[in-house]
Image: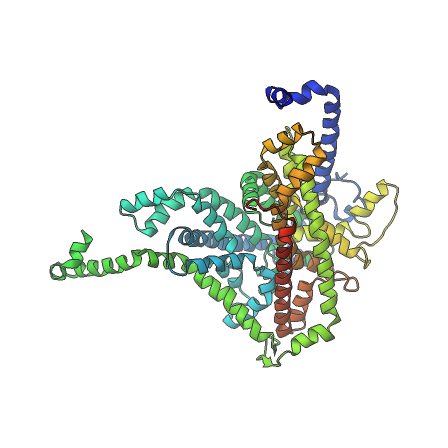
Length: 299
Length: 322
């Protein structure tokens, strides 16, 4: 009896009929709490953005107040002047160069490697797959000293090479894994049809797999770009000329006690530095969410 | 067709140079097009990368960890002295190990609890749930950046936002959160917990996969929301919780940037993370051999920790196949 009646009533209807008023109040409380939590979460970022528009000497005296009484853009002018004769535009350019070049290589080659691991049978494939998982688990930070000593031997220190070249060679197994999972989802019958039509294995990759790979490529590019953009450790290790600094390292210099304590300019440039991530977040949220939830990676 | 050309070499030669070239190319191509060879060609970037940028440096660093190496002059073999120094003569080694374990083992569970709680809240669909999800996720997008690190440093400064916010509650203070050896580490823990968004998304995804029939059946049997959570939701989430626990605490062990920028290990080394100590030893004091040894010790600790977690798995992680 009971189960029959429950099945007859549509699930969505139950609350409306049964507790009209109680549910309404519950909803209000829910939204107030969740909204407050959400605002609290983003408050630090919002505070930073608004502070960057305050006159620099009032940033801390008015820290309790979010909206500036007096709006000014002078922090941005001062911030973009940079330091020791290098403008902040140069730092931005350096970061874009490193992030774009590393990303193009890592995504392109990860796709080919993933194709080999997912589709081609060759001796040692299992071993390579294990190696890929290993490289995924192996944290980059542990490698900082070993890699530094090795790049030192290769004469790569004090250049962008360690920031770019290893990524071209798929040192981040994560991207191979991402593509690998995606390629597994492409029906094999497509490969076979192409093969019957005389396509080589390379042809199958370029003509069949690549066109279908777009979602994984977009997700991969987003993560790679954001990680390279934020990368601080390798810049700290390998870049020493101020004019070749990426944004992350330049910001660190802004915050050092020795250099000017222009907090307004510092927050202005910090705001500029998070803009790419914010834009990606706004426009590609779908891909970010998918990437995170399907592969369960860190953020 | 192609095989016919290959089969009659004389005919091909008669065609002149271009014919010979074609024949050679096609043989090479045939070889190249074998599945085995194609596999190696396609996997080549990773094979090179793995050998050149992971395996070789790792093996070299085993050697360096047994030497006195200051990067500039040649390494000098000294057996186990680096490790002896670490365990018996470097108080900062133990201090930083303790700080790092404390940080990782406090911030990771907290982060997961927040992630799960908020994920449960956001499971309810409403017109603004997209905004909620975005707002809670945003910090983990930005949390690793230098910008947020320097922001954090200012927020917890004596005249920073945190003390100003406390004024709203009637607490007037200019307490230096980063200057006190008991509170400084907590500013970093809060920064870590604040970035619970990505775990939250993972929980959301797995919550949505729990079949609704289970809840319906439980309701019929009279189970309330709270019981349903303990008896259905949580057990079914344990695989996700396990995976996140492993990955996130490893990240916690290896935290570097935030500590390096915000506290530099101060005050009194109360926030000196292992990785920062390793960096200082290797690149400030030029004890690169010692640093290489430290890297290996950390790798062992991470491996051991993961092994222990895996050993406990069968006691609390729900296994669908069992």
